[in-house]
Image (cartoon, rainbow, N blue to C red; front, top):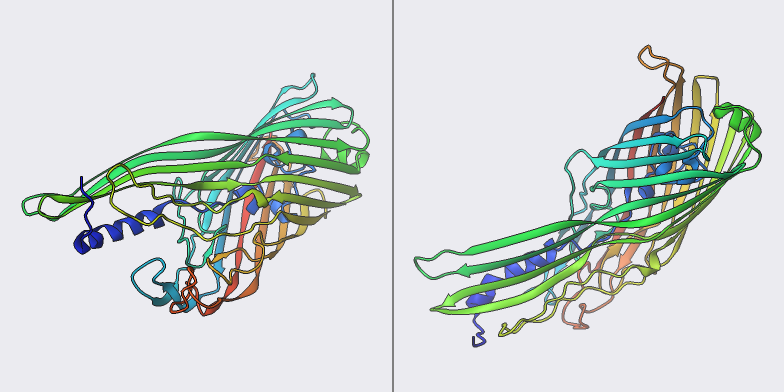
Length: 470
């Protein structure tokens, strides 16, 4: 087929190609466990859970802590999580220029991201209590607003890339723990991710007595990544139960290593249009990116109990430097029309150190008070003053919680724990001032995001969880 350059065909295909660029799920995120922590008890302690005592969610926080000396064989936990984001508004900036479209446009950027609302489940079963307390566990997060939501945002317009849809997908964790020596426990787990592949074609027909057509197909596959845990308690417990363990094991030391997980997306696409007579203009390209990216992490922590008080400290080292901005590739096929390839800005990502700390005060046999704090640095090296507008400000996280312990549940002799937590995240304000010229260095045009804006905001939410021991 001959190559054709017609303004009519370009006007038909440009909106479609732009839609594919924006719809390509290309933003990567950390998961709900890193964002909030599983369970209201852990959330109330600033997300520090590597030393155990996470009320049924040990399979995620540290699978080694599954192999506890408790007399209960089965533990079931269920809860709800809600967080509402509120980012600073970004108005009167360039949202389109000649580098990505036909002209320069000023407008308002979408900073209204979805709330996080879902349920959390935890299940553990002591399979072999007489053989190293061998225990298996399951932890899951299931969004309630939808089964899953994916949205890349736009590659050049300002985007808080870790917040748009990172907590809008299911998460499953499988773990197992074994007591190998007095006071020493080991564990292993599997973290699930998902890969998406698809293909599509569209034909836009302007000829009289004809129709336009479009087809699309996709498949979803599961991807696993592993993690390992270690828990060392200084001194073996005498008897059973949490109180006995705290009295004889004042120190707990925990260590977890998580490997990275990447959920890839690939979409071969064929777009054609008939604009002049029987002649058609064909575009063939492949969109490829990463749906989600969970970085490798090394988490270490310690807890100390004295009387009715317990202090927890944890440090997470997250390997974000391996993250690469997803690229959309437009690959011309055989006899395909001329096109310019897709491009995304280049960013430098940093490994970060996340400190966490928490304090727990057992007021009496029924009530426990908790407070926590963590600080998460931004993952981007420098501000987005040049091409591109990815945003990830550093933030302070302040948490508080209240626990209620009961010896019965609905009249049955089932020990239960009800935990409530509040979570406040304050993003540090960044002042973005765009450099001159557009993304290609053309000084007659301005970069998207020009002349500049303030980035930041806050998130507020909480969780409630119930744990039952059988």
